[in-house]
Structure formats: C-alpha cells, structure tokens
Image 1: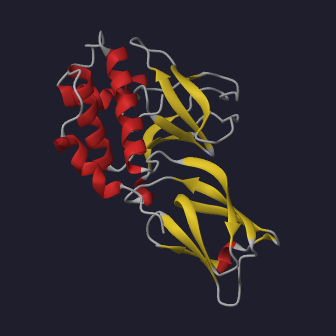
Image 2: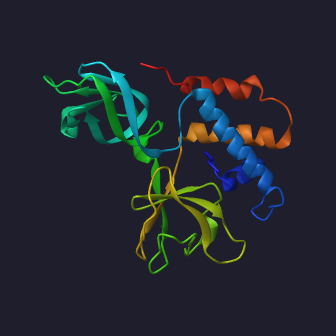
Length: 244
C-alpha cells in the first residue's frame, strides 16, 4: 500500500467531493501503481525507509559510493568496527547523499561496509516530515494496536505515512463517522512501540513535484486503460538516479 500521494489529494485533483467514495478502491490501486511505477522508472525511492545497507567488495580508500540516496546517517561500520560519524562528510551535504567521505588520514578497510540510516530522495529533506497538529488520544497507544484515536479523523487519508516518535505508521482506513483511524504499524523499517497520550503526529510530505506527477499519473490510470503518454513520462527523467 505504498503511495506517494494520499487518497484525499487524488480526490481533490479529480474534483471529487469527500463523500464521493464509491471508486476509492480503484483510485487507491491507481495511486499504488503510479507510485511504484515512478520509483521503478527513476531507480530510486521517494518514500523514506530506515535500513542497514551493506556495500560489498569495497576497495580501501576514503570515499564510499552509496547504493541508494541517504537522507540521514545513523551508523557506519567496516571490518574494523564502528566509524565515528563526526569523521564522515556527506556529499552533497545539503540533500540526499550519494557519497560518504572520511576525514583526512582515515580510510575504509577493504571488504564490506555497512551504512545505517534513513534512505530515500527528497529535494528538501528538512521538509520531509511535517506536524499535523494532531496528537495521540489513546492512553497510551499500545504497540500492538491497529487503531489510533485522534481528535479529527478527517485530517487523515488512506495511504498517508505518519510518524510517532521513532515509529512510522501508514493510514489504512479513515472512518466515515467519528472514530479511530486504522493504521499499519512498524512501517518503513521501524519497530512498533507504545506511545503516550499527547504524542505529536507528523505526516510524511514527499517532494511536491513528485507528489503532483504521481497524482497526474494516477488520474490517467484511473480513467483510461491506455499507456501513459510521453507528457506524463518525460518529467520523471530528471529524477533518474545516476550511479557515481
């Protein structure tokens, strides 16, 4: 159920009212297909994930070419053990990193190097997560719960990624009447945990240009049984990942 835009956003894109829900299953399927197709076409992930990626056959040197886009570095290990993060420079420094470079005089040991952190692409990583203004109303939200009680369920939409402390959840179902929202726990490589009442809820905000292209592609897929035209293919070329 990975989507780079929400069902509510697709409703607005298509000019549908919030209560026009008869085609929601088909629209959500179109969103999933458009999101997966864009990531496959670009060779990169636009949705964040927490992971440890091991790079094999690394040659001794001070620079490591990364296998994916790195949003945040949380750990670095080679055959000699942990490498201090303060000795590492991300390249580029102001966006998803493609390279890691060690401080002068330090070198990666040949063999395997494992990089842990948040992976994915965003044109403004600082804007990846945004406060929703909503908080957990459960006291507490248990790690095994598949529902979250919130003050305004209508503020959420199926397909939306949420962050509570270190855990990422995905909205599965939003009730049409007041009640808790249904969620999938432990998403994007995170672990389910208990969260105290009042915990702030953040929402994942993919790059606006990526989201808008997914919405346009999903709208086409939902309305036509035809291949995407070049006008909807061409914009993705600027996001294709080049190996370095």
